[in-house]
Length: 453
Image 1 (tube, rainbow, N blue to C red):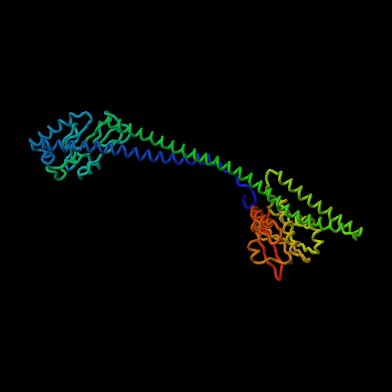
Image 2 (image 1 turned 90 degrees about the horizontal axis):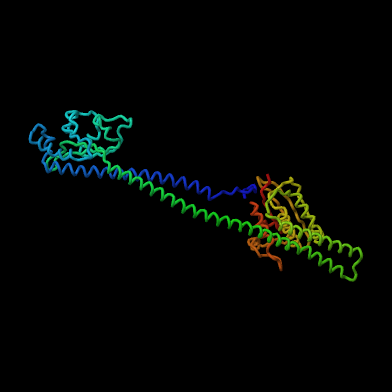
């Protein structure tokens, strides 16, 4: 319930979780799939470049042809290098191989037209000449601007792998040049595509399995919570009806006591006719009052729920004082009623009436020698404060600390449910109840309830 007594709209936990979790899992799966697929492709490309680098270094070292990069005019070095490159030209995958001097000039190429050229912008070549192997992949012939060293390569296919391999001098000396391998690796591309496909399928299967598991768990929990919520609502309705029955039973003791006293007076042999008529009227009024309370209990117990509603305070207090008028008059108790504004509070009418009757009955029991009962109400902020005070015997400090506990009573033979019921019901209506000692003696009960809009 909200502070205004209105019901909070329930949420569909299963549906909300389905949409939220599906979106979150989808984002995580897509991000993870993209990250892992890029990592897989990069690892495979780096591995391909490392194998090619190891092959070239071993080939040049075996043929002792790396000196060609240092002294390309030497006929012996040129012959050794060309013999080494014959092995490279015999390979199927490289569609173009370039050998670069340290200044970036093409020293040798499978495309003879490139020999002697120098390309002004080639970041990968600069990294290779600095001693770092560079491997990248891309697509040619798709309308994107081409590098100058890529001229004429689009005819071989769109997907390519380009490797820049640093060439070290004799005995692992400094970098003396670099070689560029431009390949259309069919087998490598197939392996990458297959690996990426399997990776995406694994991410998809994992995401669906995670979603299905979490959805089943939440759906089952939601179903159990709905069942428990229904049982709790039934239990609360039953508990409220039982509490109302307890309140009525508690308050019935006063009219029953009145009936007993009147009946005993009628049994006196010297009773006068007018006294007998008065006692008979008291018995009739007490029976009518008890009958109204029982009828009210039956009507409330048959209601599907006990929903709080606006209740006028002044009218309810007048009805309660009218109910207890005979007992108040018999006990010689004066009643002083406040003249505050006609406030409306959020409560259940029948329960609030029983609460006020129970407090008035307790006040009557506290004033055994007569006294004064004061009832007043006023507005404090968004709350209405209802005060019922008596100048009876009052309560000890220990009794005030325990008075709201169930089954605690200061009266001999009391049930101990009156004020415990008051506290529980008032708190359900978002209110509060307090017991205030009065000087020199007496007690005030202060009930705070939210004002109706």
